Image 1: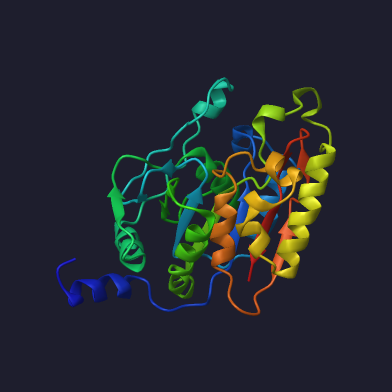
Image 2: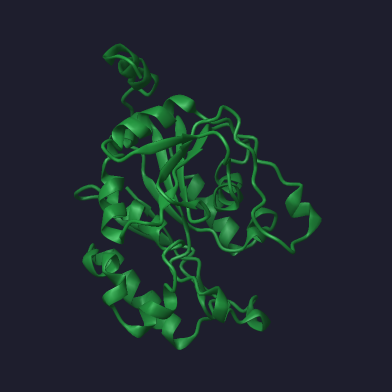
Length: 276
């Protein structure tokens, strides 16, 4: 952008509107992209409570980069970033348009953080497998914001706050990951057992949910200093940090509503939330 007029043109693309809620979605298995189950039903139910957005920003656990990037292409590709699944899943497409103007506004809002306008990524499965249940017509433009793996948790919490003005312009911001995500300990034999978790996962879920409901985010930001249950629940930060972005966007007096709040396969949680 070479002038204030250019910036104004971009800002005018997204006029002030009703404040949008914020979502964190436990996206789970890629199979949620083609299955109908209790969790995809939860996504569909929450979609009925949402105003129609002008555009969507998705912060997915699956775009974990050095530095911060934002997709800026007009037509993002559908990325099938997984292996060993049925052919039907690889044939899925989510043909939502991108929004280069929103990408530029996002880049400007995050200044002085350097943000790269990316033309190579697209929509990974952390985005499209949930978006297809929220907006099955793929008629809302979508961009993705990457997660800088070189930064600590508080950095991401504070960075998210810089995007808050977009909520007043009809932009729906979604974090997509899983709060409890230990793939190394998944109990595959009990994958379909309802609300099944190891003792440490049950403890972590209860403790984290209490912090969420009480608005006590400091222990969640300092999760590495918490109990052994936390360490087992969050062995790596990639699927956890989208939650932190969501919490950073919460404003005073806004409430949190939990849904899909179940454990899965011993060492995963599908807990999702809506802030409004």
